[in-house]
Amino acid sequence: MSDARTRSRNAPAGPSPFAVAAASLPHEKFSDPQVTAKGEPRASVPLKHLDTLWLNTGTLCNLACASCYIESSPTNDALVYLSAADAVRFLGEAAVMGTREIGFTGGEPFMNPGMLETLGETLERGFEALVLTNAMKPMRRHEAALLALREKHGDRLTLRVSLDHYSKAVHEAERGPRSWDAAMDGLRWLSRNGFSIAVAGRLLPGEDDPTARHHYAALFHQEGIAIDMDDVSQLVLFPEMDAGKDIAEITTACWGILGKSPTDVMCSSSRMVVHRKGESAPRVVACTLIPYDPGFDLGETLAEADCDVALNHPHCARFCVLGGASCST
Image 1 (cartoon, rainbow, N blue to C red):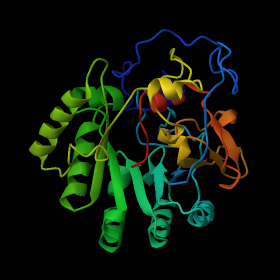
Image 2: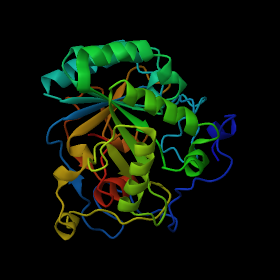
Image 3: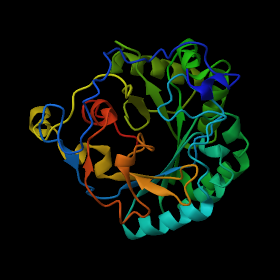
């Protein structure tokens, strides 16, 4: 358990129910951006088009989940709040590059004091906006402002709520006590008020996608929540990640073997802005999942970040290539 979790009153007491069952990652893997541990050429991904720009609003969160990839918590400010002024600078760059969507992630975005200003500016500039939230108290403090944004911008604003499982017991084993009822209440409020909404969930070890979708569908029908289970952008079920567990490295030959293309991978169409504690200015990183690794730091501007990304991290394999997942819509 991380220090961030032990300092949070509402942290879950035990291990994550979603823990990856695999051997430890050998140290020689993912150590060279050019070649794999077997000496084979490592796959890389060019930026085809910047369709989605993610803004990490900061790692502070009202929750301290059992297995948060970024270790967000009420005390972890490793990524400080991204200011509205800094965010707007990147919005200007993104507009020039023809970006469609601005994604907001954290931490909990609504804990950032400049969140509503940045979100409003994003929508005023014609972007679509996707906000990842736990739909709890930080979001609910801004009900009036959110209703005004929905009234003005309609479905260009989507809020994706993290509901880790369709059962309260599993959700709270991951997110902590008293997290389920508040999240469900927030989700019902969003649905009742006509917001464009989505849900992000997870699969337990051995649980298959159709079974999970069936149970989520029953829950949302019972609660009167307007989500189409057949639309994979409305119910996103993510594969699990654990950078310390063994996984195959992705070589250039894997594209043909797997029947996939570099353009299928998230970093072919997205980048993320982060502001690390102690650094004077925000930076652009290749991936929403890897904010700290210097090998994925691409510079201070989106123009600098228009480059190939070597798939030199376990998340590249488990989440993106083999898992087929993407954080974007």
